[in-house]
Image (cartoon, rainbow, N blue to C red; front, side, top):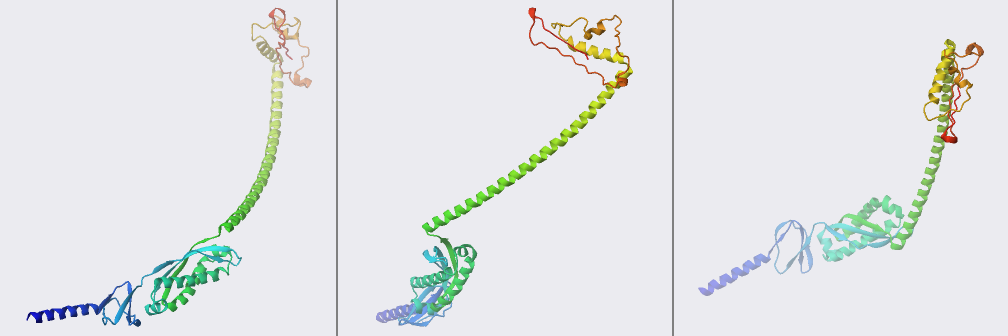
Length: 330
């Protein structure tokens, strides 16, 4: 009995082991390939539990998610025979696991080398048709679309789908970058000089126009001022004439008193004037009357009333500390 139990237990273990070896699972993120003695049997397995023949069938699992191939920067020539350093990357995934295993033996590194060659051929072809300016700014998006489409056709032969091809960076070699920079610097300097010359010419034009306008405004202002001043002088002369004609003696007295006030404004001043000077004509009469040499009014004589002028001059001190002061009343 004990021997029978051991045999039954052994058989149960063998059956359990064989059962475990007869099943395999496929994840959502995987593709499975069944091989029989190294040859492909099937690659169409949905996610879940599946069965196989132990020791005869072998299962290979592959990642079906999108993968990134970051290629090393390579040198390409443009239509201008200019050398460019291009850094790009590729997004790809396995589309047909059977073709993938047949073409590259399921080796991701070998698949990456195939993709690098395909993308490099596409970049070399497209860059050779375009100038640096077109590659950098104008046709960059178009180049990526063309390369993606062409690479997808070639990659389909070994079961790979190209999702996207992108150019990360385009650089010039150091010697080319230096020459391009110097040329750009010279062009910018030339543009700056041209703009400065245009600005200076415009400034000269604006200053000339402003000066001309200023001269015109000053001339007009001086003309108006002279006109107004002439009208004022004429009005003043009329007022003087009217005042003199109303009472000529009072007018003469008033102007003489103003002259005396301006002349005798300082007690320390000493006047050196002849006693019979006309300046003291109102001191000669106790009544304050002045002999009239010409009783006719100024308006009848056609003359303008004389203007008052009182001047005190002390150019040099006299003997004894006296000062010479003269005053005239016209």
